[in-house]
Amino acid sequence: LEGGGSTVNLPAGRITIEGLAGGWRLAGGATVLGEGILRGTPGRPIFALDAIPVFGKTVAVKLAGDLLIHPHQGQIEIIERVGMEEYIASVVAAEMNPKWPERALAAQAIVARSYAASRWMERNDQAWQLHWHFGVDMAYHGWRSDHDAVIRAIAPTRGEVLMFRGFPVLALFHASSGGRTEAFSRIKPGVFAADGRTSMADAMPIVEDPAALPGAAGLNLSASHGEWKADIPLPEVTKALQDWSAKARGRPTFGVVEGISIGERYADSGRVGTVSIRHRLDGQARFLTMAATDFRMAVSPVRIRSTWWDRCVIAAKAPGYLVLQGRGFGHGCGLSQVSAWHLARQGVSPEDIVARFYAGARIERKY
Image 1 (cartoon, rainbow, N blue to C red):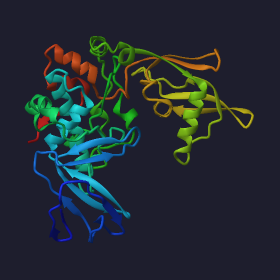
Image 2 (cartoon, one colour):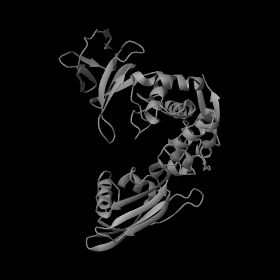
Image 3 (tube, rainbow, N blue to C red):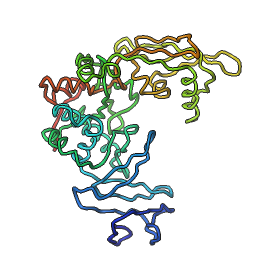
């Protein structure tokens, strides 16, 4: 442990760190002002901790980088300092099946590296640049002993980054496009490059993706990643929307949901832009319009697998059901992972796979 101008060798075992105003301390030890660093043996997992996600279950992770102990508003942030390629290997192993073809893993590495480089530039002056949870940035599960195959697969792409107008691209990706991608400007409206001024919209336009449905079928995922169907009881929709409303100020208040229909649909991507909701509040029928992306995330991004809906009806059978039929899985912008699997099996290079989904950007080797 290095902190407060001194170095202390810590014994193996559980370490408890307590956050204090302006600093921190090890349990039973002296108070340290400012930051401290826990150093391990490079390349070996030396730290294990339980990471609390934005949503979902707590995840146990092993970390091989240095740990920065950063006091923040009377609490502490534990931040791993790790090299880019080690980080990308873990992201690829968490975001894509490590047993998939090497070309698919390598394509995912280019995309993830581009995203990470963009965040690094944007947050370079902050204590940390990338969050470990996919609900904030990308999934990162730390060090694992089975990463060797992934490391070998992505090695040829070392340093390759998607660039647009001089900046790395905040390259989004998802499970399956269903046959056509969505525009970046609709998924991340108002998001710019690291300079805060350069629009990224043209880097990720809508593109046709004929590899998506064959990819889903080849992986035996047609029912979830190809053409899917969802029957969701209206009471569950009501509760989900009420819970969503209660989580942040300024969100609309929902009564009992009675009807849902498609509002706006984007002609170019086929995806639903807004949802019209009829609900009963204080004894009166009321109507709300909600962004389809918000509706999907509020109700269930797993059951409502995308916003590309071919059918949206209310089934009258008690207690009433929202019946949706749609295509794809995820927000639909950027790389479609099942498509990458299919293209890789056809012998398409990682760079050519990536180029299909980021038509406005180009790949450059930066290191």
